[in-house]
Image (cartoon, rainbow, N blue to C red; front, side, top):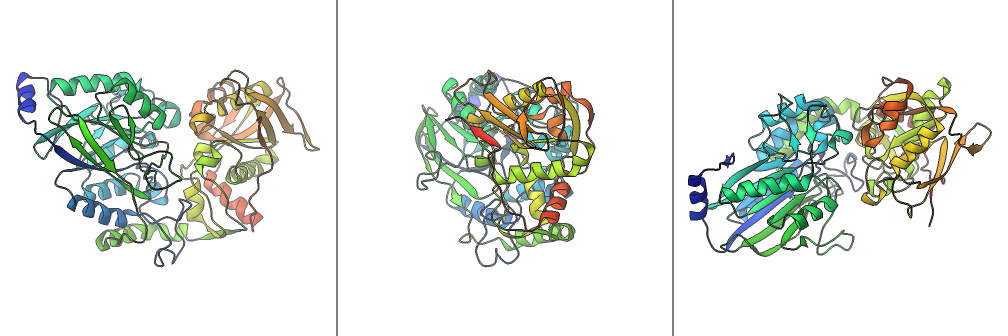
Length: 526
């Protein structure tokens, strides 16, 4: 069961009386699942027909179900929790919104989840529908919901779960910049994560809880900062930046768990490729004496649960005609991985930007500008289906066109490279434009050193006073990912163009076979 926090003396006495020595707990966790209910390939995209049957695919809800049940059987005390971003990422979300996520999470027996930024992609109404459909609490501590009637009584900042005779305090955390990353609307006000978590820790301690777990959809840098500032936290289950932690895989970003003082931080990459399994031992005072574990790879060695697989197959029937339509051929892998596209020019970024520019060039538009955060997968060599295209561009964004001065474009580029060290989605991919930036300069202090624009006969230096016609997506045009200059300074904006996935599919069909291209549109000074 889960409880709202109390502040009475009776609650304090109850919590103190329940303390036990050498309490062990297994924390099973996922994050950034992004509607990958079916198995995926090694590029985080749709698994090609027949590949799953021969063992070449990963993840999927049916494998997760098997792994979760097996992990539960290995321990006497467990929590199953999620670090946010169940929403968005495949046709399942486009068609069903949060309904399939709620069904699968209930079926697996999740105990709690924090709100990810993408849970707000369709506004408070869809999020409220999801909250009402799940059998567990949805948590978020660093947001003021009092002005949002759909959410103010639906999402808790923290909760207490009783497990194995002990009371466990869980706190939710979501990105402070969710207002820029998604569509929560003006009534949801986000706040500093450290202050929010500290306040909830104090409330839990008043209630006699000395084992505290934060579910944080905030990324590893924020998680480290929160752990350092609030050492009373025992475990942080993270998400948002798709960090892979492992003790055995040399490609991992760090050990599992990563310790900051006495706080254990874990994360399990994304897309259901792994099930995190952290085994924690607490002493009588609630201090961690041991924290060990390793993410479990959801490969072919994990048998798919038959009932879950059948249900996903049933839910996929309405989607088949759309996603199985072959739209093009690819001559090679078109790289769209976030670790690449959010720090430098990438082939998928060039392809998307070229497609956008091609669609509106007859309107006099000369520059295409898109955020790498909107690019969610690579495409492998061979046949390209509409399902794969939608996996790359799942957000149902539309083309937006507008005019802006050269100075405004330079400001946009400054914003685009302002958080590259944090691998943020605002990093730009462009067409009709080239730029050079210097990482040695402080963010927003002149990192952009040169900008060249295509004038038809070649590239020439950008004119700060000249007005350029630009195409982007409606999320960026309306100020998403920090692009306030596009919202405030745009001239004659039109935000209701065709769906970006359709634009990309049409362009790939016209260009087929598509050859991946990287051609020095973005240069970094060394």
